[in-house]
Length: 79
Image (cartoon, rainbow, N blue to C red; front, side, top):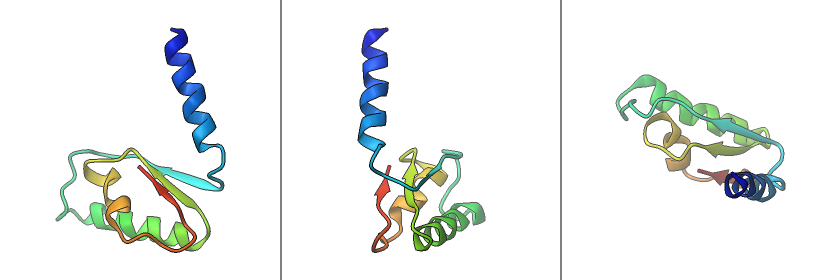
């Protein structure tokens, strides 16, 4: 149990400097030809333009799409 708590604390420490940030989670079953898959990239792009860092579940599906888009200057991505 203490190992799990330690991993959570470490994760929070690593993310503590990424502010402001938005986390994007979603279906792992969406495919690249799905409209929502591509809308997610547009949402991430707009949030990045507003100065938000983008944090995702990494993928696959809707979580991978924002991190596959070209990185925007000034908006870090993590996923």
